[in-house]
Length: 245
Ligand SMILES: C[S@@+](CC[C@H](N)C(=O)[O-])C[C@H]1O[C@@H](n2cnc3c(N)ncnc32)[C@H](O)[C@@H]1O
Image (cartoon, rainbow, N blue to C red; front, side):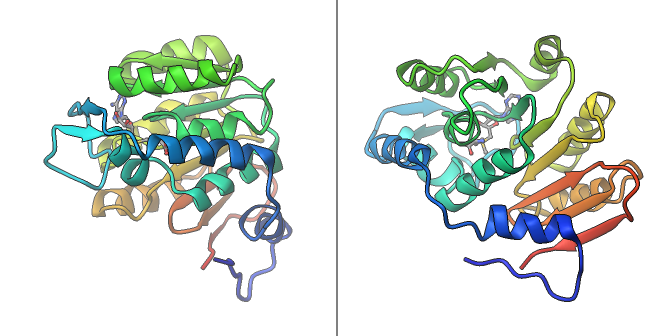
Protein backbone atom coordinates (compact mmCIF):
# COMPACT_ATOMS: atom_id res chain seq x y z
CA UNK A 1 0.00 0.00 0.00
CA UNK A 2 1.76 3.18 -1.17
CA UNK A 3 1.53 6.19 1.11
CA UNK A 4 0.86 9.66 -0.23
CA UNK A 5 1.55 13.16 0.91
CA UNK A 6 -0.72 15.93 -0.36
CA UNK A 7 0.18 19.59 -0.35
CA UNK A 8 2.92 19.56 2.26
CA UNK A 9 6.57 20.23 1.69
CA UNK A 10 8.87 18.68 4.21
CA UNK A 11 12.17 17.17 3.10
CA UNK A 12 12.14 14.85 6.12
CA UNK A 13 8.65 13.50 5.45
CA UNK A 14 9.39 13.26 1.72
CA UNK A 15 12.46 11.16 2.56
CA UNK A 16 10.51 8.97 4.93
CA UNK A 17 7.96 8.28 2.24
CA UNK A 18 10.61 7.19 -0.22
CA UNK A 19 13.01 5.42 2.12
CA UNK A 20 10.57 3.85 4.54
CA UNK A 21 6.92 3.60 3.59
CA UNK A 22 7.09 3.28 -0.18
CA UNK A 23 10.42 1.48 -0.22
CA UNK A 24 9.90 -1.84 -1.98
CA UNK A 25 13.43 -3.12 -1.42
CA UNK A 26 13.54 -6.60 0.06
CA UNK A 27 16.20 -7.69 2.54
CA UNK A 28 17.43 -11.14 3.54
CA UNK A 29 16.22 -10.37 7.08
CA UNK A 30 12.63 -10.19 5.80
CA UNK A 31 12.82 -13.76 4.48
CA UNK A 32 14.39 -14.93 7.72
CA UNK A 33 11.74 -13.30 9.93
CA UNK A 34 8.81 -14.23 7.74
CA UNK A 35 9.99 -17.85 7.61
CA UNK A 36 9.98 -17.91 11.43
CA UNK A 37 6.54 -16.28 11.46
CA UNK A 38 5.20 -18.99 9.16
CA UNK A 39 6.65 -21.73 11.32
CA UNK A 40 5.20 -20.21 14.49
CA UNK A 41 1.81 -19.73 12.89
CA UNK A 42 1.51 -23.55 12.75
CA UNK A 43 2.08 -23.88 16.51
CA UNK A 44 -0.89 -24.83 18.63
CA UNK A 45 1.13 -24.48 21.87
CA UNK A 46 -0.78 -22.30 24.25
CA UNK A 47 0.25 -19.33 26.33
CA UNK A 48 -1.53 -18.08 29.41
CA UNK A 49 -2.35 -14.41 29.05
CA UNK A 50 -1.64 -11.92 31.79
CA UNK A 51 -3.87 -8.95 32.51
CA UNK A 52 -1.64 -5.93 32.27
CA UNK A 53 -3.46 -4.05 29.61
CA UNK A 54 -5.27 -4.11 26.33
CA UNK A 55 -2.39 -5.74 24.47
CA UNK A 56 -4.31 -7.50 21.71
CA UNK A 57 -7.45 -7.15 19.68
CA UNK A 58 -8.92 -10.43 20.89
CA UNK A 59 -10.37 -9.77 24.29
CA UNK A 60 -11.72 -11.96 27.10
CA UNK A 61 -9.37 -14.84 26.46
CA UNK A 62 -7.04 -16.11 29.11
CA UNK A 63 -5.20 -18.55 26.85
CA UNK A 64 -3.91 -18.00 23.32
CA UNK A 65 -2.09 -20.30 20.96
CA UNK A 66 1.26 -19.21 19.60
CA UNK A 67 -0.43 -19.28 16.21
CA UNK A 68 -2.96 -16.67 17.40
CA UNK A 69 -0.22 -14.51 18.86
CA UNK A 70 1.61 -14.51 15.54
CA UNK A 71 -1.48 -13.78 13.49
CA UNK A 72 -3.35 -11.34 15.74
CA UNK A 73 -0.93 -9.77 18.20
CA UNK A 74 2.46 -9.61 16.49
CA UNK A 75 3.21 -6.88 14.01
CA UNK A 76 1.95 -7.63 10.47
CA UNK A 77 4.53 -8.08 7.70
CA UNK A 78 4.12 -4.68 6.03
CA UNK A 79 4.39 -2.79 9.30
CA UNK A 80 7.33 -4.91 10.41
CA UNK A 81 9.14 -3.95 7.22
CA UNK A 82 8.37 -0.28 7.89
CA UNK A 83 9.89 -0.69 11.32
CA UNK A 84 13.03 -2.23 9.80
CA UNK A 85 13.18 0.63 7.25
CA UNK A 86 12.69 3.24 9.98
CA UNK A 87 15.59 1.83 11.97
CA UNK A 88 17.68 1.67 8.82
CA UNK A 89 16.82 5.27 7.92
CA UNK A 90 17.41 6.83 11.35
CA UNK A 91 20.35 4.56 12.25
CA UNK A 92 20.00 5.02 16.03
CA UNK A 93 22.74 4.04 18.51
CA UNK A 94 20.29 1.98 20.53
CA UNK A 95 16.67 0.83 20.63
CA UNK A 96 14.15 0.35 23.41
CA UNK A 97 11.05 -1.75 22.80
CA UNK A 98 8.12 -1.89 25.23
CA UNK A 99 6.09 -5.03 24.40
CA UNK A 100 8.12 -7.91 22.96
CA UNK A 101 5.37 -10.54 22.90
CA UNK A 102 7.06 -13.45 21.08
CA UNK A 103 9.65 -11.20 19.48
CA UNK A 104 8.51 -10.55 15.92
CA UNK A 105 8.79 -6.75 15.96
CA UNK A 106 12.05 -7.11 17.91
CA UNK A 107 13.45 -9.19 15.05
CA UNK A 108 12.54 -6.55 12.44
CA UNK A 109 14.50 -3.98 14.44
CA UNK A 110 17.36 -6.21 15.61
CA UNK A 111 18.19 -7.79 12.26
CA UNK A 112 18.74 -4.46 10.57
CA UNK A 113 22.10 -4.27 12.32
CA UNK A 114 23.16 -7.15 14.55
CA UNK A 115 25.64 -4.92 16.39
CA UNK A 116 23.11 -2.32 17.50
CA UNK A 117 21.95 -2.87 21.09
CA UNK A 118 18.25 -3.33 21.62
CA UNK A 119 16.54 -3.73 24.97
CA UNK A 120 13.06 -5.21 24.84
CA UNK A 121 10.57 -5.47 27.71
CA UNK A 122 7.88 -8.13 28.14
CA UNK A 123 5.66 -8.92 31.12
CA UNK A 124 4.37 -12.34 30.10
CA UNK A 125 6.98 -14.97 31.07
CA UNK A 126 5.74 -17.55 28.54
CA UNK A 127 5.83 -15.10 25.62
CA UNK A 128 9.22 -13.87 26.79
CA UNK A 129 10.52 -17.47 26.82
CA UNK A 130 9.44 -18.08 23.27
CA UNK A 131 11.01 -14.80 22.16
CA UNK A 132 14.26 -15.56 23.99
CA UNK A 133 14.45 -19.02 22.37
CA UNK A 134 14.06 -17.48 18.93
CA UNK A 135 16.76 -14.87 19.65
CA UNK A 136 19.08 -17.64 20.91
CA UNK A 137 18.40 -19.85 17.90
CA UNK A 138 19.32 -17.00 15.58
CA UNK A 139 22.43 -16.30 17.66
CA UNK A 140 21.40 -12.67 18.19
CA UNK A 141 23.68 -11.13 20.78
CA UNK A 142 22.43 -7.56 20.41
CA UNK A 143 19.06 -8.18 22.12
CA UNK A 144 18.59 -7.91 25.86
CA UNK A 145 15.13 -9.16 26.84
CA UNK A 146 13.96 -8.07 30.29
CA UNK A 147 10.99 -10.01 31.59
CA UNK A 148 8.68 -8.23 34.05
CA UNK A 149 6.16 -5.42 34.26
CA UNK A 150 7.29 -2.29 32.39
CA UNK A 151 7.04 -0.41 35.67
CA UNK A 152 9.79 -2.65 37.07
CA UNK A 153 11.99 -3.22 34.03
CA UNK A 154 12.04 0.28 32.55
CA UNK A 155 14.69 1.54 34.96
CA UNK A 156 16.89 -1.53 34.46
CA UNK A 157 16.71 -0.96 30.72
CA UNK A 158 17.96 2.58 31.21
CA UNK A 159 20.91 1.27 33.22
CA UNK A 160 21.86 -0.63 30.10
CA UNK A 161 21.38 1.98 27.39
CA UNK A 162 21.60 5.29 29.41
CA UNK A 163 19.76 7.28 26.71
CA UNK A 164 16.97 6.47 24.27
CA UNK A 165 17.69 6.99 20.57
CA UNK A 166 14.79 5.00 19.14
CA UNK A 167 11.83 3.47 20.96
CA UNK A 168 8.96 1.30 19.79
CA UNK A 169 6.09 1.42 22.27
CA UNK A 170 3.71 -1.46 21.71
CA UNK A 171 2.15 -2.62 24.95
CA UNK A 172 -0.82 -1.72 27.11
CA UNK A 173 -2.79 0.27 24.55
CA UNK A 174 -4.70 2.48 26.94
CA UNK A 175 -4.68 6.22 27.56
CA UNK A 176 -3.03 6.42 30.97
CA UNK A 177 -0.25 3.87 30.51
CA UNK A 178 0.61 5.36 27.12
CA UNK A 179 0.91 8.88 28.55
CA UNK A 180 2.91 7.46 31.46
CA UNK A 181 5.37 5.70 29.14
CA UNK A 182 5.81 8.89 27.11
CA UNK A 183 6.55 10.85 30.29
CA UNK A 184 8.94 8.15 31.52
CA UNK A 185 10.86 8.22 28.23
CA UNK A 186 11.03 12.04 27.86
CA UNK A 187 13.94 12.66 30.30
CA UNK A 188 16.11 10.25 28.28
CA UNK A 189 15.59 11.58 24.78
CA UNK A 190 17.87 13.81 22.73
CA UNK A 191 17.40 15.86 19.57
CA UNK A 192 17.95 12.80 17.39
CA UNK A 193 15.52 10.53 19.24
CA UNK A 194 12.67 8.93 17.34
CA UNK A 195 9.68 7.46 19.16
CA UNK A 196 7.24 5.14 17.43
CA UNK A 197 3.90 4.44 19.09
CA UNK A 198 2.02 1.46 17.67
CA UNK A 199 -1.77 1.29 17.23
CA UNK A 200 -2.41 5.00 17.81
CA UNK A 201 -5.98 4.64 16.51
CA UNK A 202 -6.65 1.31 18.25
CA UNK A 203 -9.08 2.77 20.80
CA UNK A 204 -10.49 6.07 22.01
CA UNK A 205 -7.91 6.05 24.76
CA UNK A 206 -5.08 5.65 22.26
CA UNK A 207 -6.54 8.41 20.04
CA UNK A 208 -6.62 10.74 23.03
CA UNK A 209 -3.11 9.77 24.11
CA UNK A 210 -1.73 10.29 20.57
CA UNK A 211 -3.45 13.69 20.32
CA UNK A 212 -1.80 14.84 23.56
CA UNK A 213 1.58 13.33 22.82
CA UNK A 214 1.96 14.78 19.33
CA UNK A 215 1.06 18.23 20.64
CA UNK A 216 3.57 18.09 23.48
CA UNK A 217 5.93 21.10 23.27
CA UNK A 218 9.03 18.88 23.02
CA UNK A 219 7.80 17.24 19.80
CA UNK A 220 8.84 19.02 16.61
CA UNK A 221 7.33 16.73 13.98
CA UNK A 222 4.69 14.02 14.27
CA UNK A 223 3.79 11.66 11.48
CA UNK A 224 0.61 9.61 11.64
CA UNK A 225 0.74 6.59 9.33
CA UNK A 226 -2.44 5.20 10.88
CA UNK A 227 -0.98 1.99 12.32
CA UNK A 228 1.83 3.87 13.98
CA UNK A 229 2.70 7.38 15.05
CA UNK A 230 6.23 8.69 14.73
CA UNK A 231 7.65 11.52 16.82
CA UNK A 232 10.73 13.59 15.97
CA UNK A 233 12.38 15.98 18.43
CA UNK A 234 14.82 17.91 16.24
CA UNK A 235 15.20 21.56 17.21
CA UNK A 236 15.08 24.47 14.80
CA UNK A 237 12.33 23.11 12.56
CA UNK A 238 8.77 24.38 12.41
CA UNK A 239 6.41 22.21 14.42
CA UNK A 240 4.14 20.22 12.13
CA UNK A 241 1.80 17.26 12.43
CA UNK A 242 1.60 15.15 9.28
CA UNK A 243 -0.86 12.44 8.30
CA UNK A 244 0.28 10.02 5.59
CA UNK A 245 -2.57 8.27 3.84
C1 LIG B 1 0.82 -5.99 21.14
S1 LIG B 1 1.88 -7.03 22.04
C2 LIG B 1 3.48 -6.69 21.38
C3 LIG B 1 3.65 -7.23 20.02
C4 LIG B 1 5.07 -7.14 19.52
N1 LIG B 1 5.58 -5.78 19.63
C5 LIG B 1 5.14 -7.53 18.07
O1 LIG B 1 4.64 -6.76 17.23
O2 LIG B 1 5.66 -8.60 17.74
C6 LIG B 1 1.96 -6.21 23.59
C7 LIG B 1 2.81 -6.96 24.61
O3 LIG B 1 3.04 -6.08 25.69
C8 LIG B 1 3.01 -6.81 26.90
N2 LIG B 1 2.62 -5.86 27.95
C9 LIG B 1 1.51 -5.08 27.98
N3 LIG B 1 1.50 -4.33 29.09
C10 LIG B 1 2.63 -4.64 29.78
C11 LIG B 1 3.19 -4.17 31.00
N4 LIG B 1 2.58 -3.24 31.75
N5 LIG B 1 4.38 -4.69 31.40
C12 LIG B 1 5.01 -5.62 30.65
N6 LIG B 1 4.53 -6.11 29.47
C13 LIG B 1 3.35 -5.61 29.06
C14 LIG B 1 1.98 -7.91 26.66
O4 LIG B 1 2.24 -9.04 27.46
C15 LIG B 1 2.12 -8.19 25.17
O5 LIG B 1 2.92 -9.33 24.95
